[in-house]
Length: 114
Image (cartoon, rainbow, N blue to C red; front, side, top):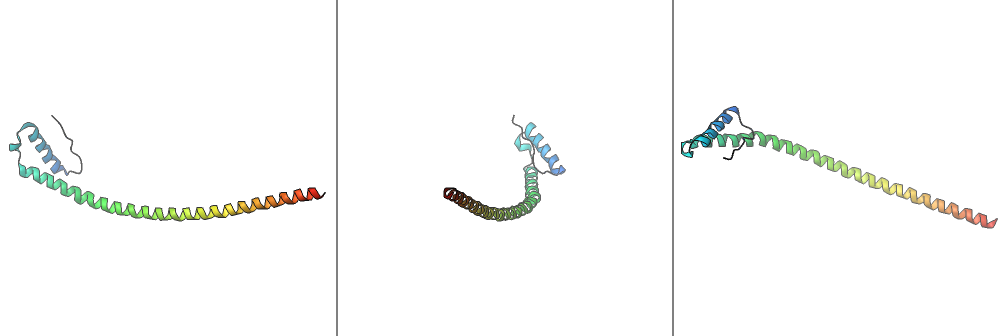
């Protein structure tokens, strides 16, 4: 026989009712189970799950979404800063290379004139 574990948020009263229903299902035919009790437990559990976790999850997800948007914005800004700095550094390096080449050229011309 297949068994299922209870998971999720269950108040103790509902957990007791679910355990009782589980025993009915294990040992009795389904006709002996009160459909009303089964529906009450399912509805209560569904309501609690959506009501309690739904509020928590929605608020948490909205906050997390806002934080991620801020982080993303800050990261984009930092990337732009680094790209600008890279361009500036590249210009400095290129200027240095041109300066060194001019120095080498001047040295070689001065040696030729000696």
